[in-house]
Each structure stands twice: as C-alpha cells, then as structure tokens.
Image (cartoon, rainbow, N blue to C red; front, top):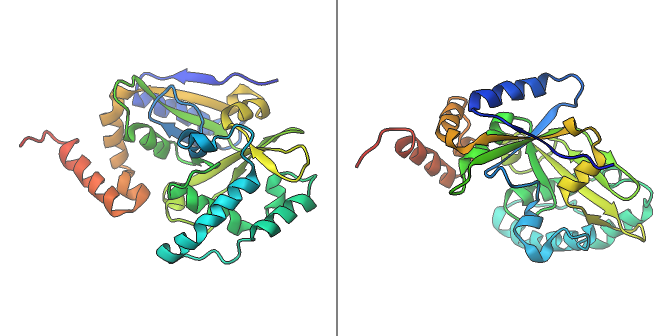
Length: 276
C-alpha cells in the first residue's frame, strides 16, 4: 500500500542540523541520502520530467528511446569535450541485452556495464535531460542546493531525506546508483548518488520511466524511509555563511570559472555590509 510522504517543518538552521543528526544516527534506517530544493512545494522530479515537457516520464518514454537520444549526442560531445566513451554498446546490442534477461531487474542487467552509467551521469551533470535523480551523501551539500537560488516569494525551502536502498514489485523497480564510477568531477565534488525508477513494458523487452516520488512511496515501505524537511527561506544568509565555513560554495561544488565568479561575488556583495 502506498505511504504518505512525511513532512517535517523546522524553524531554524540550528533545528535543521539537530534533526539531521537524529536521522543520521538512526540505527533502524539505511544510511541517508539527501536532496535540496529551493521551494518547499516542489516534489521529486527529474530534469527529464521537469524541463522537457515533450519528453516527460509519462509511462510512454522508454529506456531504449532515451538511450537512442543519448547515443545521438555522443559524437558532438566527444568532439568538443575531448572525452571518449568507446565501450558504450550500440542501440542494437543494448536492446539485445535487455531482451536476453527479461526476468532480471534493470540494475542487475546493467551491473557489469559501468560505462553506461558513467555516460548517463556525465550527461546529468552537464545539463542533458536525464531520468536520473541526483542525491548527495551530505545534508550540508543538499542544504546548499536548497538555499543557493531561492525563487522570489518562496516561504520555505526543503531537503528530502531518503533511506538508501531500493524497492521493487512485479511492475516497477526503484534503485540507487552508488558513487564508485569514473565520470564528471562534479560527481565527486557533490558526493553524488542517483536514483532511477522504471517498470517493464508489456513485452518484457524494454522499460519505461516512472515518476520517482510516487514510485518511491509505492516501494519504500515505512514512511520514515522518505522524509521532507522544510526550512524557512529567511534563513538563507545564515545558512550560506555557515556553509562557506565548511568550504561548501558554488566553486567547491561545480569547479567552473563561472561558479568561481559567483562565489567571489557572493562573498563581496552578499556576506558584507557593502556599499558603492
């Protein structure tokens, strides 16, 4: 039976830290993963769902269709990035693998094909629409993403806390991808993990993507496995200044020149009583 999402409002940054320590120390739950969002009303949506309405995970977009799009992007990415993904199977080989192991869950089928995951994670970090939902092992990194860019007139931001592990049933499967892969450097800077939710198509030869929040509610079991902490947005300056002392800032998490400029600008213009 699906569980309702447990929402926990906290009143301050110090209350958030205290609550997170309780979650981390809870011996009855898998080690937690965290995801921060700049609006407490937002749910768990992938970039494929949120940003590209024509490619929404509406149970019609299949894994093979998505893989075809990802492969089509590869020549241009290899040409201009200097990276290569020579071990990626072509579409025919990938489809054949799915057909030959119809009874297995998707993560079991792809367990020995790390380059597929490494490429999909690279695409996720570089802005390609992705069925992967990114999480972090650090509640402080998640808090940074919650407070980094808060939309105007938003009263509360949120941090999701997920009990690590997967869930599955006959017609759907949610699972977690771990950190041990060679991919974009942001994967390590952000202490990233990823979730994917799929179900088998009627023929058992392909998968379609599921919306992650309802799928997790179906599969995770007890409500304590998926929590949503909301924090007042007015705590933004306090939180960001606190995180800077932990060397959590745009540059430390993205490592790009534009993120360096953002970090310096925030230090000079936001954290100081600065006047022209």
